[in-house]
Length: 123
Image 1 (tube, rainbow, N blue to C red):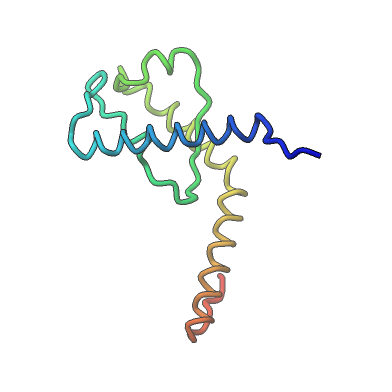
Image 2: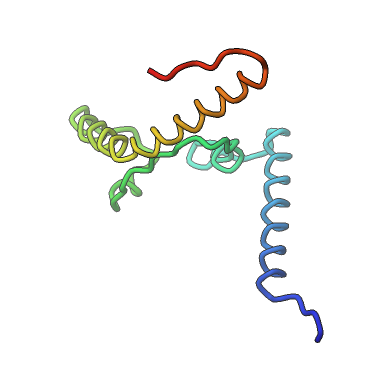
């Protein structure tokens, strides 16, 4: 019996190393203010943002949204449908938000009990 390393392990390790190296270089360039704004926008925050478990609600996008992704809304009448779409997407994710808040509150109460404080009762 010979022990072999599977290709999936090697490729995933290589991919992880490559991604981490690219992020390191991007952080360095951002801290030195050497990044170029593309279309007048600093896109580095997309890759350098901290991920802390927040819920990101992503709207359904159509082709015209990708074409006008950088533009401001061309006329005031375009704003209410965008807000309504965002509200609908938020309502669809309320179960996920509720579950995350229940977990967060339980962890906060556990920390309070460990520190000798009394837990907060949910409403």
